[in-house]
Amino acid sequence: MKDLENIPALMADIGRRARAAAAELAFASAEAKRHALMAAADAVWDRRAQIIAENARDLEYGREKGLSDAMMDRLLLDEGRIAGIRDALCAVADQADPVGEVLAAWDMPTGLHISRVRTPLGVVGVIYESRPNVTADAGALCLKAGNAVILRGGSESFHSSGAIHACLVEGLRAAGLPADAIQRVPTRDRAAVAQMLTMTDHIDVIVPRGGKGLVGLVQAEARVPVFAHLEGIVHVYVDASADAGKAMRVVMNAKTRRTGICGAAECLLIHRDVAGTLGAELITALMDAGVRVHAGEGLPGTDRATDDDWGREYLDMDIAARVVDDVDGAIDHIRRYGSSHTECILAEDPATVARFFERVDSAILMHNASTQFADGGEFGMGAEIGIATGKLHARGPVGAAQLTSFKYLVTGDGATRA
Image (tube, rainbow, N blue to C red; front, top):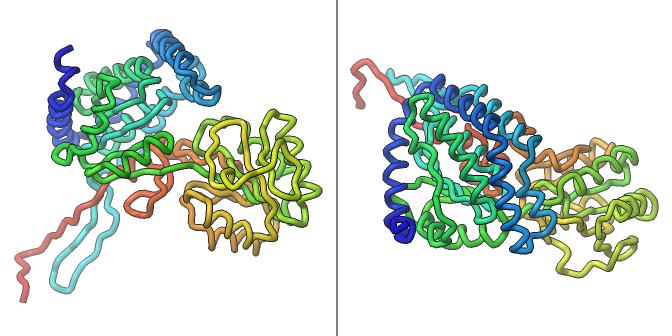
């Protein structure tokens, strides 16, 4: 208990052990990493009853804290979701190992042969909130990329994350890899987060995954480099050329499938020419499904939109809706209020789609597809550690390949420079 009370000493020890493990992981074989992940997947499934029991403790904690229904849904684990965790671990295990991949190679007239090769980042720190599956996703992806990882989950998912972490450690041991390769901060004390943000000697990059408050804090106070998205302010633009059937399916799924994930639609932009027809039908369907529609001028809704509704991440059964004159009006709105996460256009006119894709600069752009697909697993990455909305190093879903850097390997045959 004393060690848990001395947060600086606790975190320094975790950091030292992570750095030592990273040095060993950097040259671990692809087969050893695959073995560890498959063994972890088996352990997750074998211990599903225990994980669900630990999750029940977290759900009770969440109820006592007054978490919203959407946040409770993010926290919930049942057998189906645990099967999803198992499957994600297996999917990452079966992917090609990114470490050592030759990205480019060329010869120079001086006799040099130069290749650019993927290498691990080193030690990754992941700070996340209520979704306990992030424990498995982040641990798996960092391991696949040859990185050690320090996991600091939210207080709401403390017990669930601990149970999943134990399965990951079991997998490491089964494969003969260092157990310190995947460590979890064993305290709810927020001082551990502040400590992680300054551990430049031990952590190479921080990945925050959570709400605006958490990510904003990390970006403002971190001395360690950060991969982050601040918010998922996701827009869906319904063009005059949209197919009504496709639009209805996509909008309803984008908003209502799971409202608490970062790919959930938060703002509906409707071309003026279809505002009174297809636009009104979409809004009526949303309200019939229990969505509170904050509607702009010229649209039906639950209530009138205010300036605060534009650029707002609800993460709940709410959506803002607004009429725009055309695709350029939608683009202007997204540029002003978006968070560079995910945007969708519903249209059948190829020129309009091309204009939207060319001029909107978000990490993910979709055409006639639900924004709920904004997920590394759905992109074939097995899982993701988050959606990066910056423009340096990683952008969009961050999978194993995005958790690597590279180095140059230069060979000659006694070459000297004139």
